[in-house]
Length: 338
Image (cartoon, rainbow, N blue to C red; front, side, top):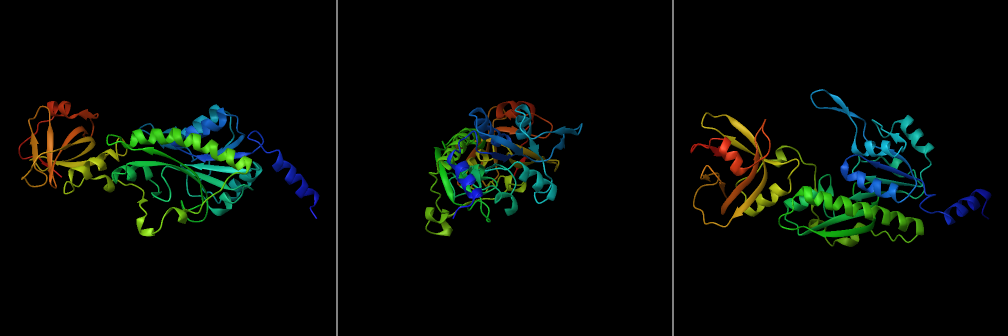
């Protein structure tokens, strides 16, 4: 026998639509703004947003809002900015929103007490074709590894990070000249559409979530996308020109690959490299040897060939094309790049 509360719940489910479904949205950077904007502009019922606490930035230590907070404020969406996601005060405030569904895009790892709270669960938008490239930097690593395609995936959250059942996926090609900035923006727009498609499927009850194990035969075939640190970004000129070319575009424009320029005096300069070009030339010089006309090109010997640096930035200066850089920076024969 169904009690009155169950009857009320069934009636609520039967009339559920995008205006009645109560959505709580969690995200922080620009990548997370576009899906939120898509939800709001298409009249989905976003009852609250959760984003990171404000931080101080710049020399003046001015308070900086996250992009998601800026957009939420512009739309008068209620906000929570917890320091700790298990804080009782935060959890109590979250419960007050009575979410039917939570959506996570580029946010922190959630404890179960948060992701299990809504009756319809919590789903995440991830910027890769899961189960490939689980982790914090999927766009970067896909390009660094020379992938020809990538995409976006929505999946239900579970205990292990990025391992939940897959709801939907969309693919895009990665061209040989695409860098992480270009693919980021393409996936941001693609992901926004996928989020609303996922919500629609949840509303109409047509979701057929698939275990990630169905997408691969052997765990050894999986590639991962760990967080990127400064040391991760250092160029290794002992690699091939193709590997270095992919490495640089996989980190351009942010956080940017870098190398050391060692002056004859022994001074070391950390130079960011944003663009390179593979040189199809035979080469007998040792790795790290520089070739330049001091006007238009700067080439470095690498494993099995050479690579040309096309765009560079040294500390205290703006990013420059290599010809601009060479006009203002004296290249000595004893200069070392490593």
